[in-house]
Length: 184
Image (cartoon, rainbow, N blue to C red; front, side, top):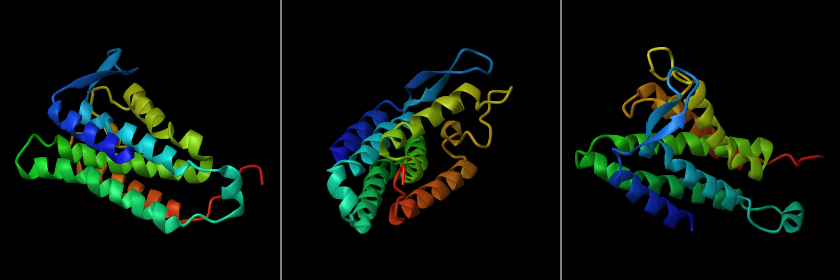
């Protein structure tokens, strides 16, 4: 289901790359326009993190899940996510494909790190809350994204891309580590 969702979102976000969604802001105007490809990876990441939590919790507490399977799933998810925007970039489109891939890596990293430390139900909303926080207070007085507000950075921002690569790698690393049990 996650791959079907991603393919649908890829097609929708690339077809509507000029569409901007008004997001709440506390800086200047009450809303800021955010390009659709900057936000659509949120649905993919939420579905992927929720999918990692599926299964029988009683069985999971007495057995060990193969972390390599989870890691392979996530790497495959990212590669599929990078495929269509990558093709549109090569064909000379506007550059929104790069923003989709960048934010997919960043949101996935945030979600996986949150899953490791906070658990799956909370982890599915952490990237969404972060984006809402960024839109609320992540712009400076001249309406440029602050350095930590990478989801709002222009598609060609190398600093935002570097942050997202680090987050993505850290999230994948968290998948390979044993998770602490809550309440133990």
